[in-house]
Length: 233
View 1 (cartoon, rainbow, N blue to C red):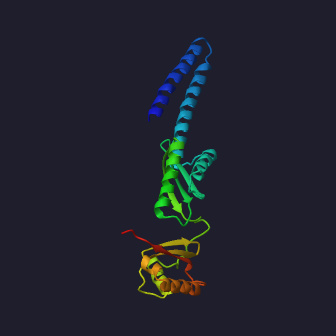
View 2 (cartoon, helix red, strand yellow; view 1 turned 90 degrees about the vertical axis):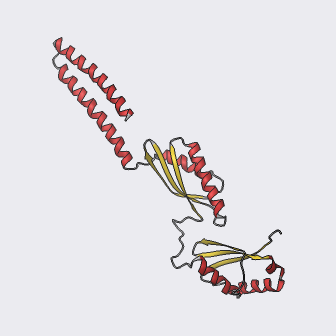
View 3 (spheres, rainbow, N blue to C red; view 1 turned 135 degrees about the vertical axis):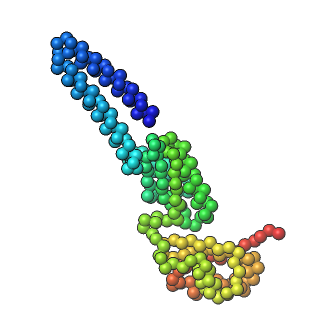
């Protein structure tokens, strides 16, 4: 609104000068200057209206940044430690500022908190290095979801825990913690067992042998790693 009012005042001053020149020329006998001045003033008004209308339409259409600006943002994101891929980067203007959302690929085996930390680093770097960026939404992916998708029939976490216990042959086995990595078409599981299981060489050996026999060809699990949890007293 301030810019529009400023151009309004500027156009009034400029049109006054043009009209003055046209009237003066007409009084001096150059009558053609009067209609020429009217044409010039009309052109100025039409041009100003067209420029402001086009700027408004660009915002309404969510216009994105130029290729050079997008390339600079891509370089900033890819230079962030922990980022191994970038896709679906979208930009749009809003009130002379820019909103961004992007899918950032990280190592599929890191924790949720570490992935969140990488996303915050990406957002902070973009906001710091690009003054016109108002905000950025970062979606963290363990792999490029444009080419790799999790099948719809992949079981839930609860069903996978039941399946894993049956694979180990011990329904009563307690897990300290389990991390599931949905990567590609199958799942990699990291199982953390109590220290008592690790100290029982017979039990731990039996679990490893069962995994070695039953894991190949499993429809859901690609790999299972057993770990021991030592909790300080």
